[in-house]
Image 1 (cartoon, rainbow, N blue to C red):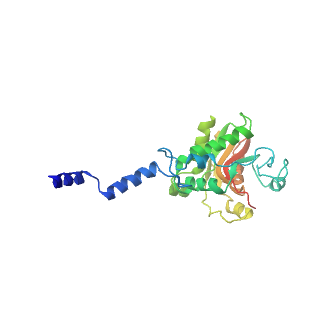
Image 2: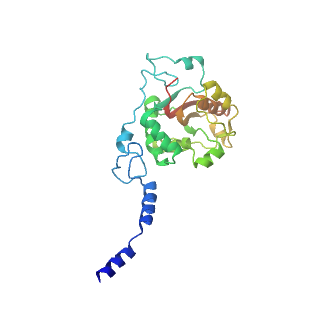
Image 3: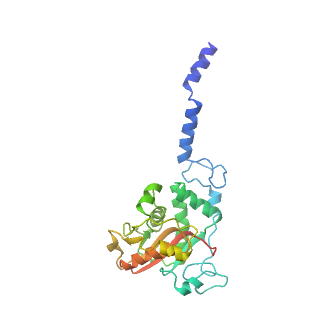
Length: 259
């Protein structure tokens, strides 16, 4: 009788392989450990980074101690940095939440390359802090995301800049203009290129989109994930201004600080 009961219980239990499959599937959508520090998450969530790691993200200095143009931290407060003095950038002003290193870099890699799109909300919240701190409430009329080449977006499944723009727009009450700028030429990876090489790489990469008329006489904030040399932002901004935007500033989650 006992043997029959044990046999019946085993027949009702899922196989180890099936249990592992469902646990893996559940963990994909509701991860149980932080993907940065590997500590257990406090509750079921689609955001795969713990509260401690997110709250520990460090921002760049505010206002005093940064370049008034691009937001680069400076040894001495005030004034433009060397590149802004040379007129290297197309934007009126640019700001970033933090430096592209440490935990912020890890979180951005999870968001951008590992498909962990729910991270758009906490990352956009950091961008919203910067937007509200650095600019007047009525400074911008709309947000625009830096576009990805169609093939790359199809391969990745999303445009990380567009996800950030939509989430930031929701949090700050700003409309997001889509299809106003498009990437007409896929460019080779920019990693390791100098600023001059990046500019050449991006020549002719952007063009007005089918809804570019929406830009006319509007004050635009351009959104991207990382400010590296400013070449991508500048190439995109040239198109926005040519299409009629009154002014364009830029906001990114992070920026590289090393030469």
